[in-house]
Image (cartoon, rainbow, N blue to C red; front, top):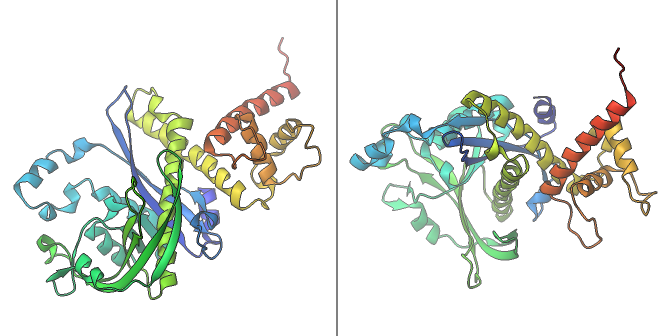
Length: 382
């Protein structure tokens, strides 16, 4: 895809964010998709990671159904789950997408595959080593470490904090929070599960624990346990990796656009192939909305012509309020005008427009452009 390949040459590091989403459509069985999202580094990271990266495309999407893995759950009841081959588990999708993303980038050493706790798979670590690429995963398993007689958690309890780091976030109700995290990091030998020690060798990996200091009542404390094969030798390196992991929340915005903007759960198509093709197209549209939202907030100096066509800009100029006749026609101006078409009030105290109003505005702008085109090129028949 042109928008992906064009960005590669300008990116020192490519972070592919992995996530799983399930969509329930009443006209067919549940369809699940494992989705990667790529962000490119814009400038050296600061404390607010959202100001340093832009989404430049989708690297891989895997459609799958649980019927393919029928019987795996019953098998886990009979034997240790760690002894079940990875090929027979749903977790195989994470390895497939890591391979696909790495092949698309054609520069494995520049990729950093970022995943939540579902990606904490030892086979994924081994595959990353085989492909020569990097990973950063939030751990959910207290793995064997060092000489096999201890675990990661026990080793990390003996590590002294290197410093603190402040993070700001919003909860499910949109309320702003901040937390002061105590940072500890260490390099150690991580061992494979007992049932797989003959098949996979141990690895030297970096462990980062970030635990909230004095969490408030009524909210679960922030505690991130990250594992990576990237070098972490200083406190700044550890904070850098925390900022990279925080990018994972941006893909939640992408999926919200798919569900509430494009309403993919309401699709009524007769076959799975048609549904998959439609969702693939919707993913690109949702990416563009997400990218435009982020770009307008962080790179307002970008030329508007790089995003909007001449016809779109002319229509948006006509929709400009009389009180703004001499406003600078930059990208931020046109994005806010699009957002106003989608219901954004654009008051001085309002936050920047989000994906919902931008999606609505782009939908309406498309209709206005089509109407203007029809009016300009009237055709007669007879």
